[in-house]
Amino acid sequence: MTEAAALPGAPDGAVTDGPVTERATCLLAPNPSMMTLDGTNTWLLAEPGSDQVVVVDPGPLDETHLARVAETATAGGRRVALTLLTHGHADHSGGAARFAELTGSPVRARDAEFCRGGEPLAYGELLLVGGLRLRVVPAAGHTADSLAFLLAADGAVLSGDSVLGRGTTMVDHPDGNLGDYLDTLRRLRALTVDDGVRTVLPGHGPVLRDAAGVVDYYLVHRAKRLAQVETAVEAGHRTPADVVAHVYADVDRSLWPVAELSVRAQLDYLTEHGLI
Image (tube, rainbow, N blue to C red):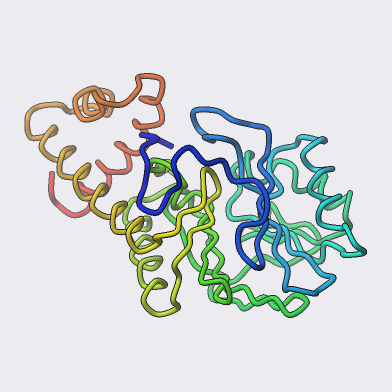
């Protein structure tokens, strides 16, 4: 994750923890860092009045956090019926196997490697759990296995790391792919038109209440960065490290190794499209 700037629809300085929409509650994992912002957002989803809960991204292998998620999800006689992963990065999935032990719930993800007692998720699949309706949205780009989940009843999308609550995300080259990521952003933008999505429930950072504005910001940002990389190459900056030093001079140097992954993805994209 890079450039932790405020985004359209983001509350100033807010940390997401607690009820957010009629169906979604966030529990913030205690793993803050330059990469995870305030920490990983673990999402608890349930239809009002239902005794079945869906947990999205149980987070890292942190016993205190996992116990808190399990206790909150099962309060009042409820049970965790399903655990979902937006992608396989350890800050989202590291605690999934242990959480399955604690709750007895199956774990489903796009990549079979991270599934426990459930099948890999299919693009476009409709998940029905205790009256809750979730649609699986393809979201490759940040990683090859990235997914988003459409919670249409709340006008919301759970974006994982495809869209963050603050700043912009990285394309995790070579697993991530910039062309796929741009397709994902356009797909998320279409949800704001076709499905009435107004709210982004991100994998890190505060909730965003202007989904269309945020995705437009991301698309413009990506186009600008791509143009900057292309210009840098034309000016003689040939290695990824040289391009990072030239293009990301305004970014904290501690994030340059992360920025280099995105630059490598951008260089691949420009090469594939015959632009450099």
